[in-house]
Image (cartoon, rainbow, N blue to C red):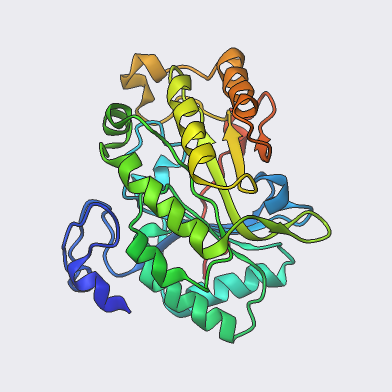
Length: 300
């Protein structure tokens, strides 16, 4: 399966580098998986974190260049530790042993084939809790098909509808054109959410969207697309946690927190469209206390 890295076209960047020989494309990754933290995350959506936490594994590197990234230390600055497939299996099983509700893979796209191999081995060794693919949606449907039967829950963040904003803030002018078919492939694989008797998700698609300052109309267009292209059973998590981080100070229009009025207008539009299932964040979600301390916790 790793032979796909010989001419890497895992994501829409289609860099074509030979990662098996140590070459790195836009994302900066070679053939080694780099991890920054693995722990029981308590601050995800209620159906994900529950009472026992989500077994969250943060991967280093990214195929986007978001100027406001809260996790820039790992996504852009590459803090983390290289691990083997057996290390990944150990990480997953150790988290499961702690009683977490799921294994939550954060920013995993650039390691798709390695993670597919690790998940297969982990299942053989007793991993039974749901696996969540927590991504930025900038993915290729063909690569996502590698994960069919291995991922139970897809948690994509649809960031932009507008190509100019996507290009300016994340270096990906084709973002929505690529994200839309990727999300549809995710839905094809797992369908609408299914929950257990305690309200914890077992399977299905939940779409996240971070509302950005000054881009409420863009948020509305994303909601319109969801309404028109997916069934009502799909959940939407509208996030208000934006705060200016990393290089946001270079862009005055987003160098501020999201206003309550902007966020409430997007929430109201969600209901105006007839969307019914989803999550909203409480005031105060835009706090640095919710950004994990990347300290190699849980990494062998």
